[in-house]
Image (cartoon, rainbow, N blue to C red; front, side, top):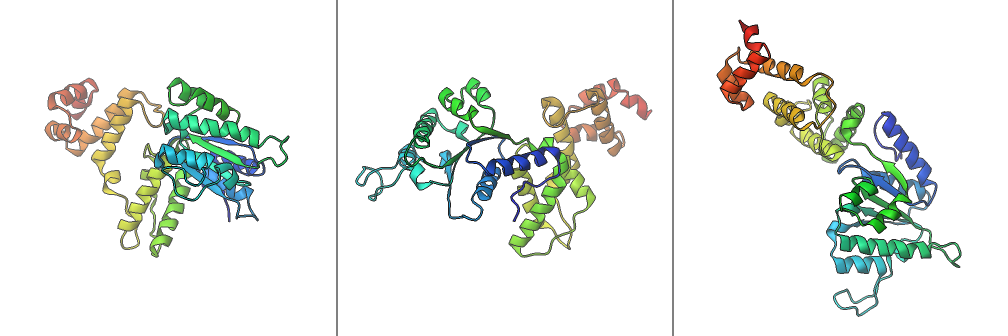
Length: 322
């Protein structure tokens, strides 16, 4: 079984090297990446490689959005039997429970400062527990994920400064957004199609090059998570052995809208051509489709007809028709 990320880009190859290297140590790790980039997958891969041959060693995934403050403190520091508001049986602290394994703290920057304070206190205690001068020092790896670098998050008032100081001492893995490694998308598509078909117990559909091209061109604002959701939908609605993309991805108006949004917001991949050239080609395509009927073209683009006529004239498109 392999624990490598899927893809052939230089970025992914470097991350896979980091995964192998860090899995052979007990160093704490800070994984940075936008939502949906696969941070938890990287964390779990590191753990699985590090405990290979001793799979009983645990990984505890601490999702701070799914736990209340009392429960968080109970999990981190343990509690004695009879503590009000908690189960009757006592509980050991998280460090004792996870000895030899990994503690994964996900999206800590999304947690409140009160929660972050508890996490910081736990990390402070862990420094003492892992001190080699202790008779039985603890052997635990901490993996924390955030959407951005500690200094940036502190500046945005999304991360406690003391917690940030812990994170900057960790080994760092930076996972880029999917839009920065588009060459990996065909491999991810193939993987998710096979995975979905295996779960559904159906034969894999044929994927044509046009479908791949459309998927590669998407902005994927929610990254791999969004791509997987689209592939799952496509597999479910495929018929006659052919891979069928959701209609909103292949609809021409949707494509026009997405490109206009990219131009207006500056998001997505870099645009090499001047914006006038892109806009000219875009409007020209729509005008040709409607045989230069300005009323239909304007309605399609969601523009006022006079505005479209004025802009088309500026770009030389009305004169081009004559």
